[in-house]
Image (cartoon, rainbow, N blue to C red; front, side, top):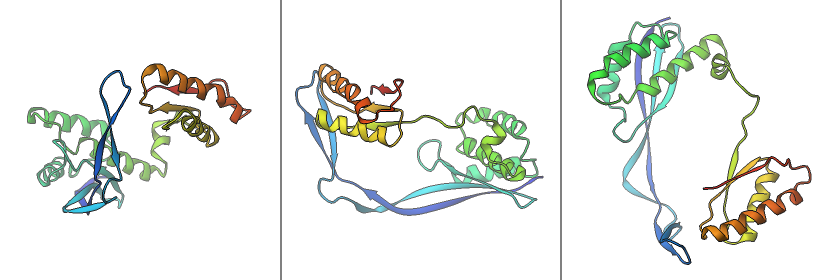
Length: 215
C-alpha cells in the first residue's frame, strides 16, 4: 500500500457570537467574577466565518484516512503545510507509522515550529490501518478495560440545587462528580458534605467508592 495524495477540506460556517456580562461574586476571600451569557441577543453572527479543517490521506488501495486538524493558532494548517507534507510522504507505506514519524520529525527539526499536520497526519495513518485490517483503532492498539469511568460537572446556586444536580448525575450512572462552586472554601465544605451525606439516600445501591472531585 502506498500514499497517493494528501488533501485538506475546509468546512465553513457562520461565526456564532454570544454576548455576556461579568458578574462580581460577593462574600469571597478574593475578588471573583463570573461571566453570564444570555445578556442581549442569545446568538448573533458577524461578518467573519469560522472554519474546521479535515485532513485526508489517500492510498492506492482505495482506503482514505481522515482526521480533523487544527484550524486556528500558531499550529494551524496552511496550504503550504499540506503541499510540504504531500511532497514528503507520497509513495510511502501508510502502515509504516514509526518510519514516517521519524522521517517527518527529523525533516522538520530545523523548522523551529511544530508542523500543523503532525497529529492529524498520524491519526489519518491509524484510520487507514484500522480500515485495512477491518478493525477499530482501539483493537489495533489494545485496550485495558471494558469501559472508562466518567465524572459529571455539577453546579448550583444553593446547597439544594447542588445536591439535586449531584443526585441527577448518580441517576445517570456517573460514578464521580466534580464541583463548580464559587462560595468561599468553608461554605464549599458544607455543600460537599451535604452532597456526600445524601448521595446514598438517592440511590440505595450506590457504591461507597463514589468520588467528588474538587475544582
